[in-house]
Image 1 (cartoon, one colour):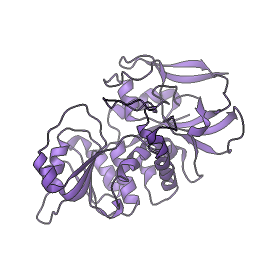
Image 2 (cartoon, helix red, strand yellow):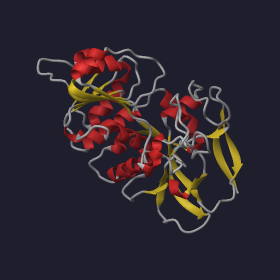
Image 3 (spheres, helix red, strand yellow):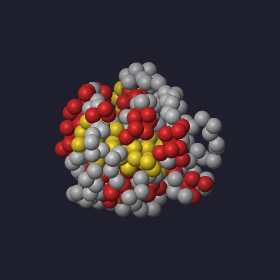
Image 4 (tube, one colour):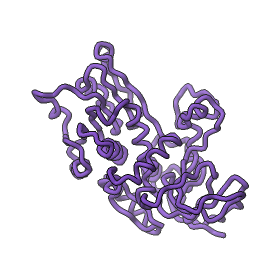
Length: 347
C-alpha cells in the first residue's frame, strides 16, 4: 500500500516535495494511523526555510509532529476505536528522567555537555512524521482524545502542551500576575491556558509587527497588550510575579529583571543560540529565578487534552487557517509570513 507524504529532502531551503512511500509492515508494538490533521510548527518552518540549528535532523524526512488521526490497523492486540494524537517523544523509559516523568529530558542515558535537542524527540525529526496520508506509530505514543476536541485543536495540542509545560513551572499560576512575551503560537497558547484557568492578570508583549497577533491575544482575553516594554511601567505598577518569554530575543532577560517583583520568576521558552548578559546583583538582590522550559511530557500532554475539552479554554480561536494537504505549501508560506495563530493541514 502506497502513501502520499511531504518530504524535506535536505537542509537546503525549501527542498521539499510530495512523494509516494510504501507503508512498512507493522511490528507488534505499532499501529497505523490514518491522519486527519497536522499542525505546522515553528520547527517545521525552520526546516522548510533552511534555517540553521537543525543539523541533527535526519534527512530525507517526512515532516510533522503535531498529528491527529484514527488507528486503522494494529500490529498486535487492540487499540480503542477513537481519535488519537501522537506524542513525538520516544523516550527510553529507564533513565532518571523517564522514571520521574520528565521524558522531554531523555537522552537515552547519554550525558550531553552541549544541550542539543533530546534524543527522545523522534517523530517528524529523526523518524517519519505525520504530514502524510498514513503514519506508523508506536502504540505507547498514541493518546486518545475526547469527542469534544475538534480535529483542528487536536492538531495544535502538542504545541499547546509546550505552552502548558512552561506555564506549570509557575506555582499557582492562575493567581499570579504574568507577562507573556512573544505573541507567536506558543505565546498565544500560554495566554489561552492562563486565561482559561481564570487568571485575570495576563499581559502580552509583542512588537509593532505583531499588531494582528496582539489583537488575537486581546480577543482571547488577556487584560492588556503592549508593543513596547517601556510602555508597561506606570504609577501603580508593582511588578510581575512571573514572565514567560516565548520570543527568544536576547534582550528579554535584562528587560525581565526590571519588570519582575522581588522573588519573581523568568521562564525562557523561545530558543536562540545568542548569548545574553544580565547583572548578577539584580538576580541576587531581587531573588529572581530563571528557568528553561523545553518540549512536553506525557502527563502535560494528557492534561492539555483535558483542557481542550473544556469550553473555558479558547483554543479554537488559535486556529488562523486550515489548508488541504495538497495545498500545504501555501500553509507554510502563510506561517512564514506570521499568520495570526496556527496553520493546520487537513487531510
